[in-house]
Length: 157
Image: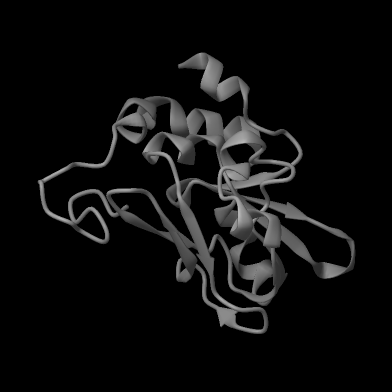
């Protein structure tokens, strides 16, 4: 499990509950992506982002990623306006699994409430400390009830 924690990118901040990362950029922009832990939810087959221009509140859906068995809402780590989504990830969602902190970025956004929400984001060290006691639970595959659920009702993804 320590190997998974060592893969955390030190150049981004993390939204622990959403398993998302944020790279704050010059000019007030930010790039958002899913952490390398998201790949443990199953092999993703499809990424359906919300369109550019939409304003999304923190913890609201930026889009959906789908596996063969479930759809996983992509929750925003901060309130923002979507400037663009990554067309390479729409074309091949496995880019997220192969390079989650690089080519697998999902959205470029303009944060709308960053000053109020920045304290909820953790640096890599704080995220690793937050994650360590929760890692075993996060690595469990979604519960399969033999029914086609859009979202696992017991675990929220």
